[in-house]
Length: 317
Image 1 (cartoon, rainbow, N blue to C red):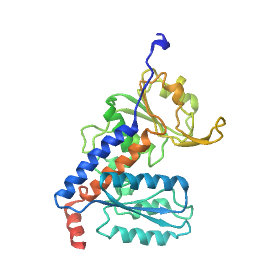
Image 2: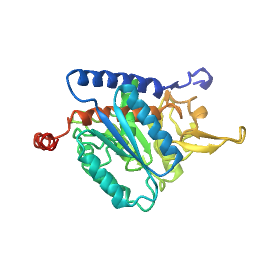
Image 3: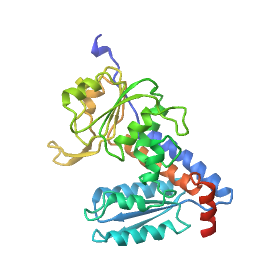
């Protein structure tokens, strides 16, 4: 088949899809408030002066304002002790005005991220990182899904890319991104939290490159979430595959002399062969922020609490 005659991939606009999801969120918030409920509130704890974290948090609070969610950013210096941070989280957990609570990662080295994620009340855990929410996700129960994996899922579903019985490769096994994406895509579509019913292969740093190629060449969907620029190249992709690029890598551009953002996929090469591809930036990033808004609304509505937990919450407020 003449490659020249082939249409290049449809570039999926994450910005456009995210706009659509934010519109749904805005309508949801307005209906919730007009029914006499308090406006949802998101509290973000930001530790230190990590430039990328500050930019991510700004995106989140701007999106919140856009959909009608009130928010606050609580800035703490990187010298804050783990116990001081735990005290702050406890205070926000018990503040009935706070619906959603997230602690922006990464945290300074002297703070145990897992301990902090588990300190956030599961019902307010809009990042979906609490061990109870991770467990519920792994059991296909309804829960607060981590925003980036949920964003990837929504890109696939809303674009109409089929998953049932399809081969998927997820490159990257991080607990916050790679593992949950694999979990969502391989699980049963008939369960409480429906999955994608795909056959999923997870690759990681110890997967030999030639092995990775063998897997990606038969994959209908490749999700790249390894944090390695140019990990996925055109020769690794089956013609007509869908490629979702979750990587965010800052690389130095010798032409402009400036840094620029690239994903894990050689975009220009792969788009000649794939049927769908997401760009970086403008792909998964905006979706992550949009899904976080959906989780904040879920938290505000207390949808995930058991009746006895709900009674306790009402009593404490």
